[in-house]
Length: 226
Image (cartoon, rainbow, N blue to C red; front, top):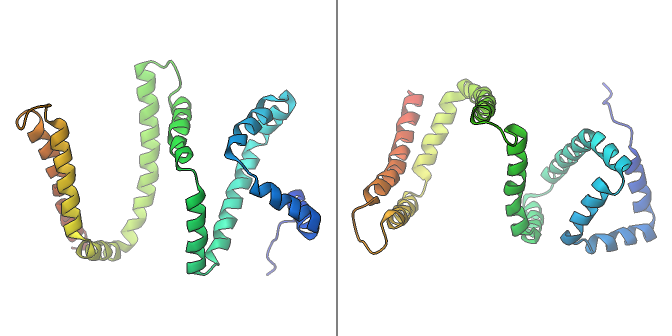
């Protein structure tokens, strides 16, 4: 059976010609070495607002562009999966060291605001906001239900794996971490200048709840295995 292969697109044909032309290839490499993050905002503003015709065409092509980007990322992952593990770790490690952490931290804030505007909207009444949040939660729960339904097929194997993981986990480090978090919570809840009382018991109780939840997880695993 012959495999269906998509015809090469214009970008692929141009790229092949560029790679086959030494002068153009060197020019592209020089430009790639001079990429600066500070120039990206100006490029986006020019694309969006420099010419109305281009910006409208850009928005019209956005779904196709997103699908193209998704397929590019998928194929990149497929190709990277074919590399030896040590080489893959070295390459991705170098990539990770070069990523600007401050810019990466801004993504949740910027796109979180965009998501809130899309899901809830601006100047909504409390009732409209509640309805939008509930609809989003129900959609997420529906997706979670579909994912967890698959667990019924190999419940025993998953429970066995979780139980083995509980045995192998570093309980000493976990206990130390919980103790430090508990001490921080108590110190945060305690009023300045006082050594006891106030909200400290509640904070300590909240931390204890985290430890209890770990015990509860072990109980759930045992019941699932049963």
